[in-house]
Length: 497
Image (tube, rainbow, N blue to C red; front, top):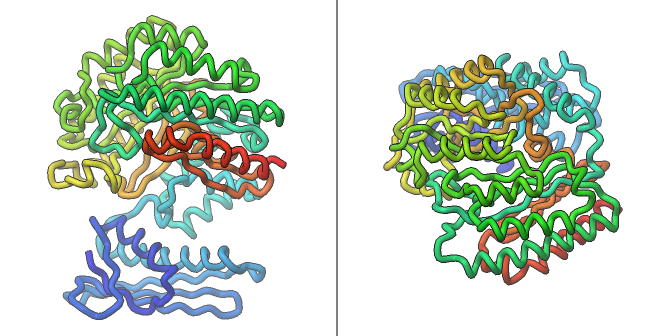
């Protein structure tokens, strides 16, 4: 959709206008010279005596007009980035209101387009804002629906039950271990993941670098007396490597990391059922790791084939029972709403099949067309459900989880997510993933080690975030892992001193 924008000359406002437009249209192109555009939006911005006032008009080719206005009193001391943010939010409010009236589509998340809505809730709570004031802010300033506000409230309350000291963990760290290999690459995936077949040389070299990172990071944490809250093995699929390689990796963890027996949670993604074996489960048992993921995504075989997952539905069920029989008592399963060719009927079938297994937690993702994925590059090949169907499927997921004893404990959102919805993790009581809460709410440093692993260094006092990423390509990682390890340690030296 091409939209002619008048009255906005500051380029810093172009991105929020584009993000709001993308909530309603497949792709939004902002134009700043009069031309052949279906829509024309004009804005009038006034600021006087600390009051920001923005009025907007949206006009169609047929001459229809829609009007909206928002006034907001800004605190006197507000300046710089915070002042600009308030102006952006006010402009977004007016623009969203215009597009809602034009399209008839109500955006339940309002003007919020960021990935972590509950982080904002926590921030306001930590600043001392009352629950009532937080809810009023989300409704009146961000245009959130009551449904989404209540969802955030429920999640925040649950997180504080699971981690009562959530606000005081900034002097600890969690660790993410990235293993960039999978049996095959899924069509929707943009993670650093490489088909493992024929790459044994790369795998061996990579594991050498990973062991080095674990030793050096662990040594530094021991020297500084810094505790580890959680460890998460992701990727890729960490169970793509052999049982022997897994054994050596976890032995390195025990030897290198401080006080491993008191780490609150260790998770291993075993997402692809075709990587799970009895021998690998025995290794997990050896190191007392019982929180794993076995991800069906869908229980429709034709869907699995279409998205490039080369395991069968039967294999998912078989490996789940194998893991359960071998003592895995905290199993997560991922489901995806809106996979190609699936509608409400197919998703309801997947939910019914999930009820036969009853894993301890279920993460319900809404399909997102990520820019670098095969699915996005060949979008014409993949037929997905309508916005209305996507919404219905999410409603069914909410009802199903509630009926089966699961409660939401974390959520995040992505660009180009179908129906402008969200991804929500649900868990039975006491089975919530602490790591998932920590990574989403950004309350402490997450050290990323391994190929493609991103670190987020959170300052213990200011909460300012410094990001650092290891290379995604195994060869680049293998060539320079010592350098990246040193860089991370240098950042932490400054952060924790």
